[in-house]
Image 1 (cartoon, rainbow, N blue to C red):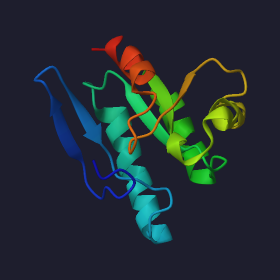
Image 2: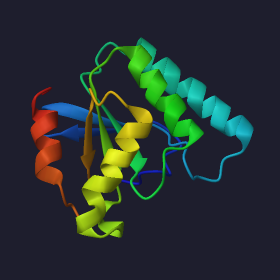
Image 3: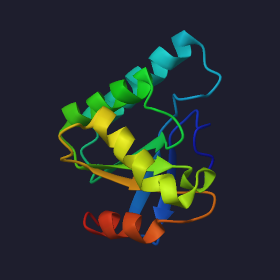
Image 4: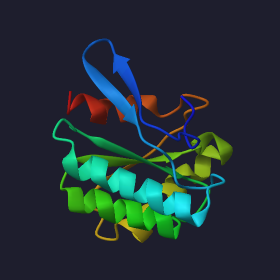
Length: 140
């Protein structure tokens, strides 16, 4: 998967059981403000108008405090009233002894009442995948 660089919707069929749908990213990509607004509107429309969504998996970069765009996207997800989890990606880029501290910090910024699920993850190194699949399997 080309996470963080997606410019269109990509559908991934997982064993004919369900689809992962990769929406355009907005984070640290090289988009103009106009493009960022267009992508934000596109994502919002998708979240509010797609009846087949069973779970939203929201990726944030574990190495950074959530950006204004992360906060905006998090609020869109909350407003959608759809089930979701937050994956703090790139966990392989920090010391394993610090991972939970970083996840907790992100959760305190986005979700201070801590009533939503935040999980560390590494797409590149495939670590913490069991915890992620345990959560996803609840919605399949």
